[in-house]
Length: 101
Image (tube, rainbow, N blue to C red; front, side, top):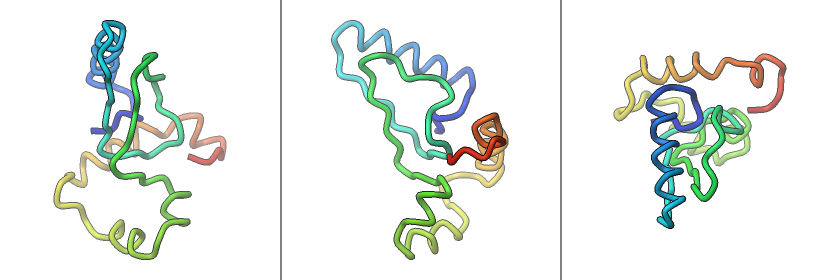
């Protein structure tokens, strides 16, 4: 769901994607949400990484008013607990040093 975080599922997905790209396949990983500027794990060579929903504060602030209003509404697709867990997992050096995410 969040390819920009850290975890075993993400690592396995990146490993498989890298192996497929090495064999000549066109590979793209699509993350449901994006909460940070760069992924915690670098995507493998030849693998494109894209996000469906960019929830970085800088993007929400600069985005259209409708995007900000929709972000304030609870999701019908993602449980609040999962979203809060993803937020907790990204609280690393990038966030704590004040670097934009």
